[in-house]
Image 1 (cartoon, rainbow, N blue to C red):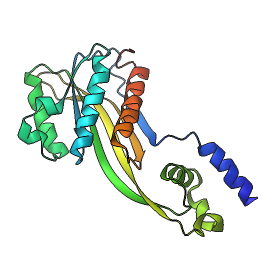
Image 2 (tube, one colour; image 1 turned 180 degrees about the horizontal axis):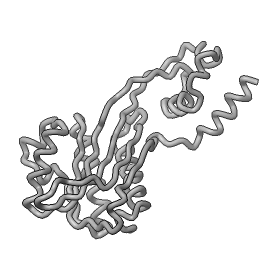
Image 3 (cartoon, rainbow, N blue to C red; image 1 turned 90 degrees about the vertical axis):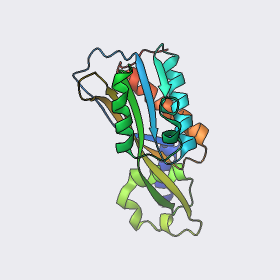
Image 4 (cartoon, rainbow, N blue to C red; image 1 turned 135 degrees about the horizontal axis):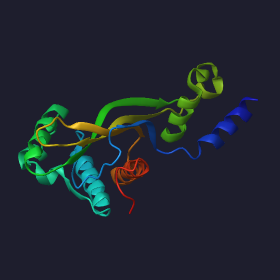
Length: 210
């Protein structure tokens, strides 16, 4: 019976993505939102990942006739090369109100957790298995009696879209958060993450389809 259960779970989890969307929200006050000039900001201690994310997302927005630019181009070089807090980036964003940006999209790493695959399975499968079964696994010898443990990280990431209006506080238009599981390949992970953001923004009719 246990073997049957495990086989069934494997079949259910095969299609699970490495990036798992958790929660999404759109401000009901924005029924006709048409961003024209968007600043893309990545908040992460990994400068390579930040630069790559900003470039790929700006490119996708540009392809939809939206003038999008990376923070690494707009912010001063000293600011670009350092690891910045969200508060420090907030100060920089507030300055943009004077130079014509009407929208800012911020992606921030909110936390990192190190997990252990006690089943010896791949990080993607182990993560999905634990979320799907939860505490049930604690009583299963088939899961815990393994010697081939693997450690992997899960990054908790949030993407937020803000409307900027001169003389007003910025207003949250949309946000979505994700679990990014074992991002060993920065380029592929970035591409997959940007695709999810773009798909959600299109679905919410916040940006046009290409």
